[in-house]
Length: 290
Ligand SMILES: [Zn+2]
Image (cartoon, rainbow, N blue to C red):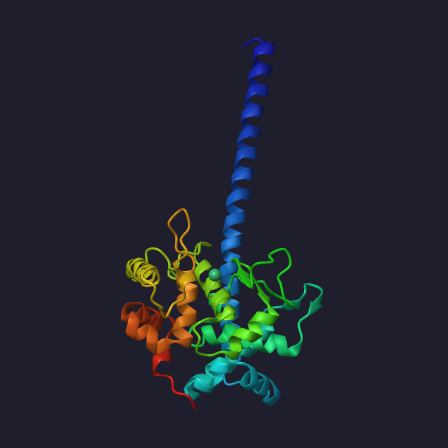
């Protein structure tokens, strides 16, 4: 073979080899990134569940309980057997998540205990890993910075709440409208794929189809009730529908109704009440004022 041809073949071979190595490195980088993101959220979930396990049997302080009792209206309805699991989750929440005020300062103890109490109540019979994607809670004195018309917002990693409206809502225990429960319910809805579609379970699980069917039926029932001028246990905002057909507000508005108007929701829509009851592991329709 002529030396020049031999040299050309060597250069071509080397080029192909480098291209191959480059492609492998890049594709490994990509899959490495997604694997580590998955592993991170999975590890975080396990870490949260371990923290809860570690806090089994622990109690909040007398002062913290006083703050909850004097601010959270629904406190009077919580059955005594849920108090232990509730307090264990409050302690774990406070240890696990930063809560800021106006983004500049750490929130006060009162603010922190009330946010933690509401978030913990939602998962009082569920694992802490429901909040595996949450990184931070931001509180704003009145209006949320940059989102003047929203009292609260949630995406997969953070919850923002207006302190003024948070306090107002937690005081009224039976109006079916609770800003904090609402936003944390979005977090649970987001947890599987990052999409709020009012189905809090993963596709492929046995109850996914049941959720989908009941949510669709419930959405229709709610729309009909309001269109005919009637009132309904789930507020009208639950009927909001995206262009793509997702119904992102039904689960959150339904959650508030489930906690605060359980008996009425059960009467008006036993199917969705039953699904919520199975999912949250509690039966608010049977709660009695102490
Ligand atoms: Zn919402």
